[in-house]
Image (cartoon, rainbow, N blue to C red; front, side, top):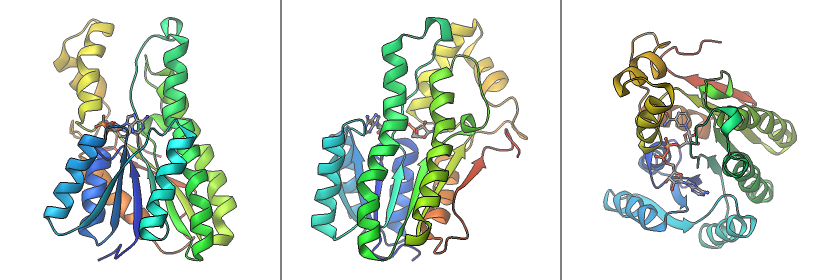
Length: 260
Ligand code: NAD
């Protein structure tokens, strides 16, 4: 078991990629916190983990709210004594051409992706320092941390920004054994992507099948979606890696869509 009794907070873990990371961490012995704005779905993930013999708790957390983030992290520390792993994963997608992007929606995107990453990091770092054990902070970036696509100005801006935050946290955390890394997945079939397919078909004036084959998967080596388990395996590698040798990095998992 690579994460035996490590306390792992995963934001946005009620669905999609975050959920699979939570299930994988629990299988590896982690005590997993399902932190999500949707408490009912978060509780369902807890039930699934507990039914399989794992340890989990659900906390309500809107990652854009400093008070909710701090209250949730306090609750975890009171219950389980600290935080060893933070996966800042909660995210949404909103697409528009840049000149039509409503300012309120731009701000919402930056708040969820960037404020969320900052606030959860800020809340967890003191506990990672206090324990003397350090910890692992993992940001859910995207191929869009490295590349751009039309209609995604806010998402691409936010995902690029996470790399800057990661590198800074890696430098500040080094002497405390706090590591920070970014995972950059290609397209993964989750509710976030399923919602985009008809939206992009309409915006680009093409069929939904063409959105998949000619937009989303066009540059992959094999026309395949990345899976939630592919991403969870990388999240396990970063969480279980016990030295500062692996910090400040961003790892692309995308069927070769983006090659560094
Ligand atoms: P998803 O829609 O399946 O899950 C997102 C989760 O985040 C949901 O449970 C939702 O309730 C939660 N959430 C939304 N806003 C929140 C908030 N303010 N506070 C707390 N929780 C909130 O999406 P997913 O595809 O699993 O995406 C997870 C992350 O992976 C996102 O950061 C996304 O940008 C990133 N990502 C996804 C893909 C993909 O193709 N699906 C690719 C690269 C990166």
